[in-house]
Image (cartoon, rainbow, N blue to C red; front, side, top):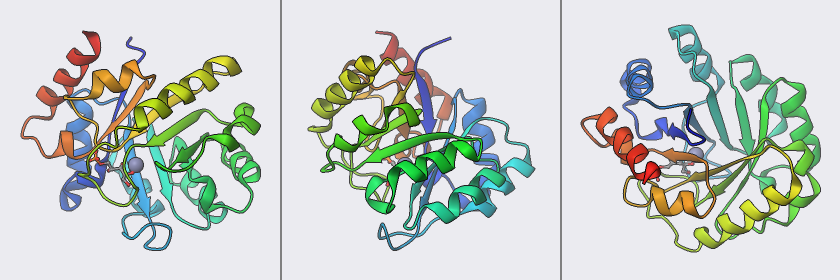
Length: 221
Ligand code: DX5
Ligand code: ZN
């Protein structure tokens, strides 16, 4: 098995045919389902919530669902997503009053926990909660929309996060989200990422399998 995981962001899927889209992208070789939750408050866009997550479970989706919360407040919705079948729950430290408590709530609800850092957000808080995170997610675009351009400064930040994770000795995945696709996935992996979110790069192509195969071929280079 590859140490790399590919997580298509369903933000760019056809919402009118969501179950089928998720089924197809998993059949095409995706590892997890990246589920972007936006509240028109923390970010200027509005998407999907726990009901859609549980609908995917009822439809028969068994792959891990990677819930990326772009909502404020955070705590109230953690239990709702855990009940709805979420596997991972990540949130932005700015969006909650008490980061340590929110992380504990995620694990207590039976999910893997993670922190998400916006392009201009420092990684400082991470060092105090290394033992409470399973995932560190770096945003390589400003959150809110798919189809934006990868911010190059994120590569240095990935190296910084990789170093912190390796030095901590904890088993923490380093996820990258925004503007990732076949053209830059190798460079992003070399900077330290092991879990790649890709929305438009996958869903805006005709053949999901061909696109995911190309991404894996790039990683294997
Ligand atoms: C942006 C979301 C991303 C988005 C990525 O706020 O968190 O997951 O869907 O889309 P692409 O891959 O198109 O940049
Ligand atoms: Zn996301």
